[in-house]
Image (cartoon, rainbow, N blue to C red; front, side, top):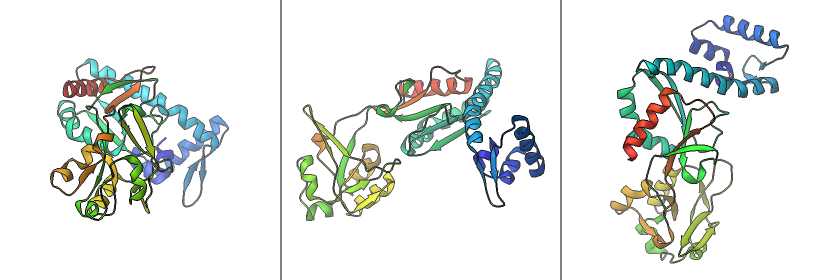
Length: 285
């Protein structure tokens, strides 16, 4: 698993505290026992074979469960320990770092937190994560979800200079006459701006010659007068208060379900995750 994650025997050996030759010998022995090649090796890189990929996908949840069981034994003594892995969007991980992580680290110093921020939505079970944190609308239906934040909304925003040169749109349809800062999703598709007012829903594939895949960069581009951006209110709050940005189409920007911590109800919940959930409930309650 370490070799597959780091794509390198040297880095994996350093991580595990063993020699590179010992690790290589161990993997060779595993391949011999299975009568299957698990890794493609060249002088410059290491990659998984098809058999290696299948094995890794089955190993990840098993190893997570093993770590959870060992953590529970320690947890029964009042000391949750081990590693807790959580996957989420950049904004969601930032919220955890601000509101949850400091208290968790203070209470449970024996737990190692591995927080992975990425735009794409992953299968947390398949990828070996204990939990995920996403907007409510993105949480898979077969997961148990715990609210982390209040409902949020996305706002269409632009700089005062931009609006001085381009009159603010009064309806979403008028965005076609504006320079909009388009967002590319991790899937490669462009995000369609979604609006709702008095039961009427509108999804607009906005025009624009600038496409970005990072919310912070979109905020900066909008503040610099490059066009209208569509961003979470939490991202633009400071810029709005400081007058660097102005909200448009506010009546068309409704609240949507906020952030939720979620995990599989069909798998063992480790003591470390239960402790993390307790702090989330304390903060959100």
